[in-house]
Every structure is written in C-alpha cells, then in structure tokens.
Length: 356
Image 1 (cartoon, rainbow, N blue to C red):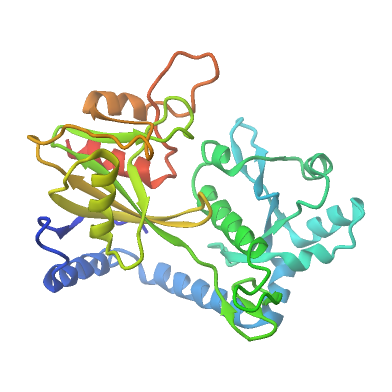
Image 2: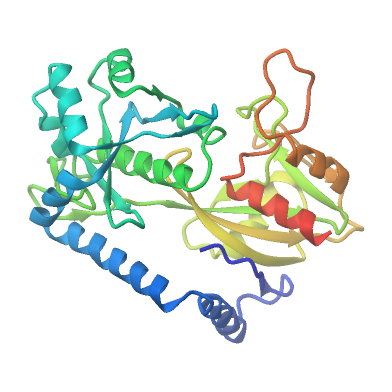
C-alpha cells in the first residue's frame, strides 16, 4: 500500500536517524492501515498465509498450479494481449490451456514444472510465471493470441496492477536462470516446487532470491527539481538520480554520496517517500527519497562518467513533461519525457509537483 504521508528521516546532514524519529515514523506507517476494513485485512491475511503454505509445501503448490493462473514469458519478455479498446494487458492463462499449447507445439508438458509462484490474486487464485524461451516465439504468439514484449517497453503499455506482477515474475525467472549452481561448491542447485528457494545438492546451502538496494532521490532547490540522464536512456528521457548502496552504508549515506559524486552537490535534508521493487538491471530494491540543497549552492558539476547530462527543471517544464504519456516516436521533435507512471521516479516527480 502506498504511503502518501512523508516523514522526516533526517533534519540535517549532522542528524542521522534518531531513535525517536524512527519510532515516530513507524507509528505513522502503522496508523495508515487503520482505514482498512476488518474484512479486507482478514482477506489479506488469508492470502498471505496461503502463499506461505505454498512455499513450504511442495504438494500443495503442485495442486495449486493445476487451478492457478500462469503468466507466460519468452526469454524474459512477458506475453501481452491487446484489448478491445486498443490498450494492452498481461495475458493470463490457466494450467490446462498452457498444457494444450505445449502439446500442440511438440512439448511433452514437463515445462509446466518449471513454473514459479508469484503470489495470489484477490480472488484467491495462485499466480505463477513460466518462461518458454526454448519454444518458437512466433508459434507461441499465434497459439496464445498475444505478443511477447520487452519488459521496459511493456511498462509504458500496461496499466493498473499488471506491471508489478510481470516485473516480479521476470525477476524470479531471471534469478532461477542465473542461480543453477552453488557459488561455493559449483554443484547444481535444486529448487522447491514454488521456486522460492534453491538448495545446493552437495552442501545443503539454501539460496533465496535477492535484490540489490538502490537509493533514488529527487533533489530540489525549493523552486526547481534536478533530473539526470544516462547515455543508455532513450532520447529526451530524464529521471531522478539513483545509485546502488555500498556495503555498510545507510540509506542516508548512500544518498548523500551519490548526489555528491554525480552532480557535485551537498544535500541539506532528506525525507523518505516510498519503496519499490524494480527489475532493472536485474533485481533492485528502490528506496525513494526527496532531498533539498541550499538555493545558494546549486551549481552543477556533472560527472560525465556517471551521467550524460543533468539539469534543473522548473515546475512548468515538469508539469508539461508529465503530460507525455508515451515515448516520442522516431522523427518527432525533441521533447522532455519521464519514466513510466509505474516507476518510483515518476512518483517522486509527481509528489514534488504537488508540493510546489
């Protein structure tokens, strides 16, 4: 659940996460759940316990797969279907349909066992993901009545809760594809039925899916916000500054370091916004913050080994950029545009405009 209220983590650079402030922040987070009805909470608890049981009980998970819903991928690209209104949605198939498709394409159906548990829908249906990269893509698309779309592009096509589900599915599938062997012994690892863990066949070491912590921050001088772009970004797209947390760093330390390294500014204060799983470049845990700098010290010194460009933008420029709903087509005049609405960067930018 998105936490709309922001709480102050750091009042200045010299004050780091005081216990009283942390307790106050926790109270705010807990109080935000009070508006949920008892029935809604009970349903949530039931679903969470159901998913946990599927992770711990292979037989229950195998049974749930037979009645569950499956999101298909091909080389980590999710299957999308066009709606009657011309928009796109994630293609969700039932187990028997996937079984029939595999048989028509010459597979014996054993691939179904590679399905990975994603979670549970509000209708109490277990959700799984399955990568069919070893089968012909065109034949699969014809059988399924959809198209496999690169995940980055699909984020601009999907709406609602679809994007987070396919992002989680891709992250889990990628982790399994890159974790088939134990890093200590070199021996193969074996997954449980749900795919929530892998175990070294030699040492018994248990591996769980991991995410790398990343701090993403929207810096403001009071009237403008700071955005940057990497050379790998599509033409015209700018985003909030972001960087991986180093070993042993706190969130605040990582944020201050990244801003200093990338644009040569010294942060005065930090406030936490929200967090998000982000599947790029592999699987990141994004921690979103707002930060301010002194209006008297806003001269940028961009590290061009990190960023291609960084600049200050006015409220009018940002408001206009938020109206651009899809990336400009090739040949269109240059225009400032922002990450998709599913991205935490977009949320930070939108929050900043509301505050102005």
